Amino acid sequence: MIKNYMEILVDQVFDEISKNYEICNNESCIDDIKSIALNNLEPKYFTSKDSSSERVAFLLDKQRRITVTAAIIQAQKKVCKQCKKNED
Image 1 (tube, rainbow, N blue to C red):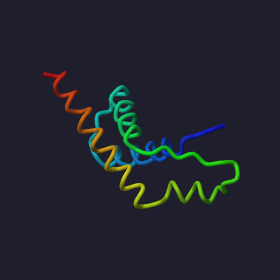
Image 2: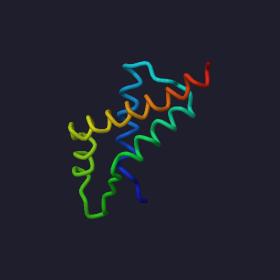
Image 3: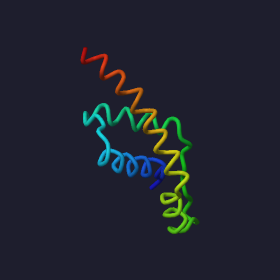
Image 4: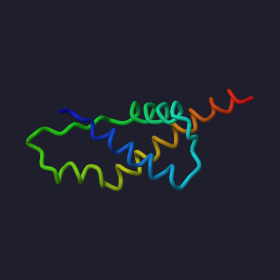
């Protein structure tokens, strides 16, 4: 099965952020935040020849996690701005 490992990383980082910071918990908003973040990040697929340690290293890379965090925060600002307009 083909899997974009950037999706896994975005899910992991989003979960970490949402545990520590107040983020809209509306499922639609969460999906929008993740979608926007993923559209601004390069997808990463591994071949069957790649070892599991390469996959784990991808997910644990600190600079990559910082980049993903920034993409999620930017997406959250964009989505939550729309949420606030809809609440008014």
